[in-house]
Amino acid sequence: MGVKVTKFGGSSVADAIQIAKTRDIIVSDPDRKYIIVSAPGKRYNEDNKITDLLYLCKTHIEHNLPYEQVFQVICDRFTAMAINLGTKVDLTKEFSVIIDHLRKGASTDYIVSRGEYLNAIITAAYLSFDFVDAAAMVHFDEKGRFLSEETNESIKKELSKHETAVIPGFYGSMPNGDIKTFSRGGSDITGAIVARALEADVYENWTDVSGFLMADPKIIPDARPIKRISYKELRELSYMGASVLHEDAIYPVKIANIPINIKNTNIPDDPGTLITSQEENTDGRIVTGIAGSKDFTVIALYKNMLSSEKGFVRRVLAIFEDYDVLVEHMPSGIDTLSVVVSSSLVDGKLDDILEEISRKLQPDTIDVFENMALVATVGYGMSRRPGVSAKLFTALADAGVNIRMIDQGSSEMNIIVGVENKDLNTTIKAIYRAFVSPL
Figure 1 (cartoon, rainbow, N blue to C red):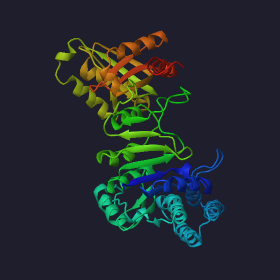
Figure 2: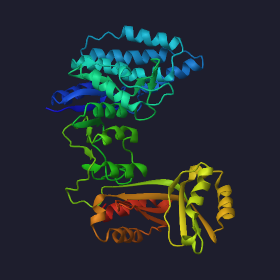
Figure 3: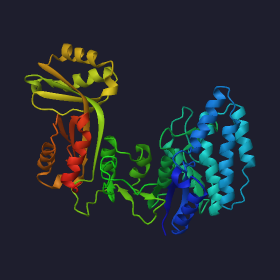
Figure 4: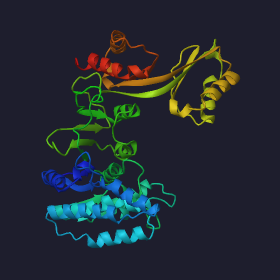
C-alpha cells in the first residue's frame, strides 16, 4: 500500500452533501490517509464563501461596524453542516474562542484561517480521522517567510503519529505562535507540502472540474480535456494566462517528483488530469494546450550592425530594470530586437523609457505596438513533427490574423505569436481547429 495525499477545494466541502461525497471518495481507496480541506465555498451562485464572510467580519471591526450578525451566519452554517453529517462535534467552544480573538483585535490572517480550521474539525469527526492543526506543522519565520525545510521535517514528525488525519489548509504559524496564511492558493500549497513531506505516491487535488482543458472553454466551448501534462508544459500554459494551479502549489511536489492528479469531486470516476515531471506523449498528440493573454506592448528596435555592438541587449534590459518593468519576451534578428512587456507596467512610463532608449542606444528606428495579445501553443510533440510552424502560420493566415511577433523557445516546446487584442479569440480558435479538431 502507498500513500495518497488528498486535498479538497472549497466547492468540494461547501456543505454536508459535498462532504458526504468526499467521504465516499476517501473510503473507496485505503491509500487516501491524509486529507487537506479548504474552507467551505459557495453552495450556489448567489452564495458566499466562508472565507469572504470572515474577511467581512474583519472589515466591519476595522470600521467600528457591528459584525455579530455576519459571524452568526458563519456559525449557523458550520453548525448545520455538523448536524447534517450526524457528527457529535460541539463547536460552541470554538466559536467562543474566535469571538474572543475578534474582540481583542486578532489579525486578518487568524480570522480568515478559521474557515479551514473549523471545516477540518467537522470533516475529521465525520471521517473518524485525527484532526491535526496545520499551525503545529507549517512554519513561517518572524518576517512571514515560509520555512520549507523546517516545515518538511515537522510534518514528517507529527504525521508519523497519525495513521489517518485531516489537516486544514491555507495557514501555518510564526515563531511567536501567531497564525500566518499563504498569500495565494493556500490550501493547494498545504496539500503539496504535506505530499512532499510524506513522499506520497500521488497528490490528489479534488475540485469541481475534471482537470484542465486544451483551451479556454469560453473560447472553445467543447475543448478537449488534457489527460496528461508535464510540469514544464503546465508552466508555459499558466504563464500565458491559463487558469491552473498556483506555482507555489506545484513546486513542493515537483522537486519531489510526485505527480498531481486533478480530479472532479462530483464525477469521481473521471480520470482528470495527471501532472508529471516527465513528459509522456502516449497518445501521439502534437499540441497539449493553447492559452493566450491580452494587453501587452511590443517595442521594436532596429539598428544597423546591432549584432556587432557589444552590450546592446544588456543595456536595453538595464533601462527596463531601472523603471521596474519586467521583460516578458525578447525575440531578435541580426539588426532587430523586440521587447515585450505588460502594458500595465509601462503605463505612464512608456515615453520616458523610449526617450532613454533613444539617448543611450541610438537605434535607427523605434516602433511601438500597443494593445497586443500573446498566444502560446504548447506541446512536446511539436518538437518531433516537421511542419508544425508552417501549419500554425497557415491556419492564422487563413483566418485573416496578422501576426506581429513570433517567438519560439529553445526547447521547441512552444510557439508564441503576438497578435492584436481583437484577434485573440480568432487566433486560439484557428490554432485549435488546425491541430485538434474542427469547431
